[in-house]
Image (cartoon, rainbow, N blue to C red):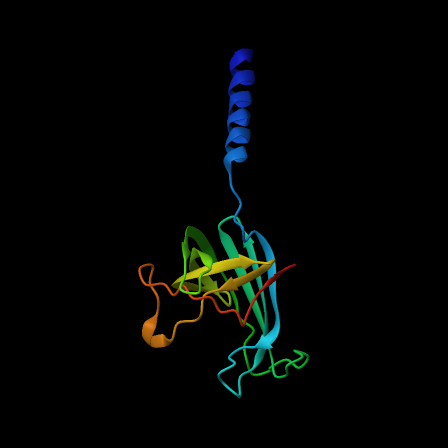
Amino acid sequence: MYFKQLIIPTCLISACLSLSAFAQTSPLEGSWVRHCQIADAADPESHYDIIRLKFSGDSFISDIKNFTDPQCKTPFKYAPNPTATGKFSIGSSLENSQGETVVEIDTHITTFNGAPFDIQQFEVFLLKENKLYFSVEADDARLPSAQNRLTEIDFSHHFLPL
């Protein structure tokens, strides 16, 4: 009896330790911030925002703070400061039309401002010189799917590690 009590837990612990050695972390692991920038440069009346992202395992959190000024000192009091949580998966690398090697990322937002949510997004990202870039935003008429994701990088907005 003593043999079973000692060997089985020891084997289970060894198996867990062995499996954890194979667990891989995402290159996005950790916290990122996009410092104060105009939200939509094409719109002269656009607001400014600061965006924080956190990736952990296969989960992410986003937090956006909106402001009226380019220094992000005056909160935009009539705009929400949205938060979202969800899951993500990283796919294949590919070369885009800009000559950059980008990586596919699929996200599933499951909570938005505390309420259940269900939206899938299909993008790419680029880590370059310690900066995180994402693909350009699709217009409403051309929402990407996994088969037709936009692969061009938006170099006007980037995130830095925290």
